[in-house]
Image (cartoon, rainbow, N blue to C red):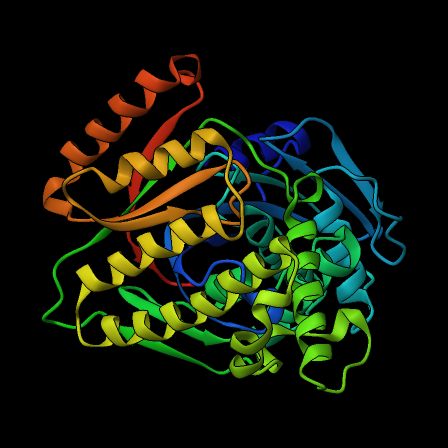
Length: 389
């Protein structure tokens, strides 16, 4: 592994251990977890590897093969956010340290197997780091603790208005199965692929545009949805409290239908996406349960269109990728991957048509954006296990 080789170059010895956290894909259930919605998702067999060893002096020292500079701090005193790639680890150190006493530091090297942008790499690096830091401090974390700590690190420290979709998929998923999660209470079902289902794999198309949620319109979209929900509650005479504690999930569907036309257009469109996506998630879970991959894919395409029209996400390049996918034989369905501000598109495809799908999408996309030839890439992945603790 590249990270293990780099560790040896830096420290002159082999790492004592390594963790691997998979990326995730979410074909249906986009932009809903931050408002306590239901989602469907999968871990895939690509992800983040962290090769590491303990540092008994309490220093945390991390290096990434994707970003410059080495970051350092003391395990018992992580600094304030520095707005760089290592903030996820600083936040994870702080979150873990508020629950458990930490005395042993860690040194390590991160490496990702795919380009950054749309596969929840931020959650994957945070989870892999948390698992390693807990291990060197002899802390046994439960799966829900990992999810909660990674969520706290990204939301409270880094400052991204995320939900728990990414962390849950990367921790709870099983191979050849779909995770059906309710973020309201954390309840979930792992639905195995039905034996009558048509075969499928995931294709990942990286647009060539890296994304960064901290600097994107992600938080703005969440605030617009919450503003719409707040207004719906006021129109309907529903008692409400703090703005940040208003959720679409706890605002009745009847109030949405009765008062949606009173909302300013941006707020209405965000609510249109949230409530329609909840319906797609529920229908998608039932389609998966009965083995109807084609229906599940169709709902994923609908999710992608709502993300474009109602959530208003996606760079022009991503939108073009989505349009190409919709017109490519062998693709059951697909949408943007991740938050939908640059990054990747994912597709659920027929493995028998893999080469034709990858070739057709690549040719069509690079005809539109030839200047991205050196940055664009594509690959296929299978539904995989969540992190091994």
